[in-house]
Image (cartoon, rainbow, N blue to C red; front, side):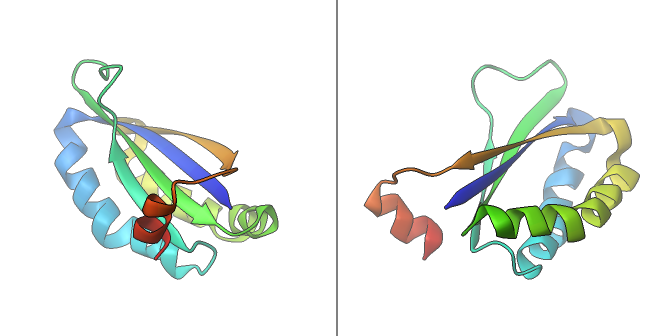
Length: 113
């Protein structure tokens, strides 16, 4: 299993709008692409985010590196552009890719259905 993690530092002034847009538009678009089996939305607590900002991590779970590569080539650029057009420098993202080596079985049933 591959975890595609997008960490986003969001200006506090747009944080509520960003969260609503992510829940109702962006995350559903990513999930409807068919490349991911599940997702998780997290809020950073420590270390404390910079003043006047909130940091979130959106985690998408993919069955293979090949599927992720295809998503990054075919779908991600347009979705990133939408995000940038809407929030510009008020929501700065960086991305990481992790291989899940082992998982707590209790979490797997909750997260991956």
